[in-house]
Image (tube, rainbow, N blue to C red; front, side):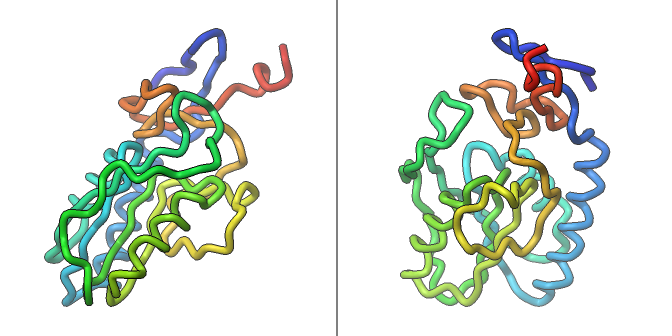
Length: 186
């Protein structure tokens, strides 16, 4: 793991290690396996950011399942959300009467999750659960239940493990945050 990453003069330092993420992901997958025992849920990955976490959760899920993807856009090239969500790719499967597990990389304001929940409730799923690797509780602007949370983090910009900065740095094996020195202008 790199001890720092410099992007456009901004210094990012590790927040969560690859090992911490792996342990917590296995715990979440084990809980999902228990909670959905005897059912065949559809795991819905929210692209692009969730792809690494999504694949690890599905790989460790013990039971039958299906997978599908939604692709949304709310950030563009910025470090903060644009405040609007655009659907770029819809589901390819029928979700009527099915158990859905929505897998997110991060829940910040909650806008994307609210958008997804509003979108899919019209299709009468049997249940909908939301899993997110990261949640920023102090940034949440909507009253949403995130059923399975990897880590609660401060309201700071993070990159790595699927999370990007202008579509780059998703391939980092850990999660990085802007260093305290950078935030304090040192």
